[in-house]
Image (cartoon, rainbow, N blue to C red; front, top):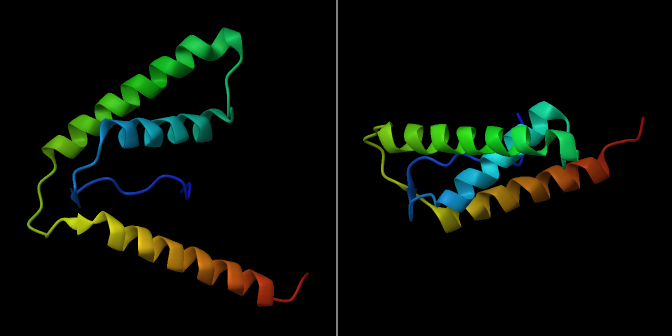
Length: 96
């Protein structure tokens, strides 16, 4: 899965529409292979982002859990720690 797409459900504070749209954009970029669509594909690209964002918002709004909401700052800290660990591991591994 694309590392730029993060879980968005069950956070405190709740996920914003901008975060959902950003994840939808990353998803469409990933599956289309375009970072920025050509003029001819721009409308269909934007429509796909809008539809995926709407479906994602609907999903998040209807999911249920008994788990405590995750704290954004704690998740961000864990993400940075994992990235640093990956980076240091890549620097110490032998080159092929």
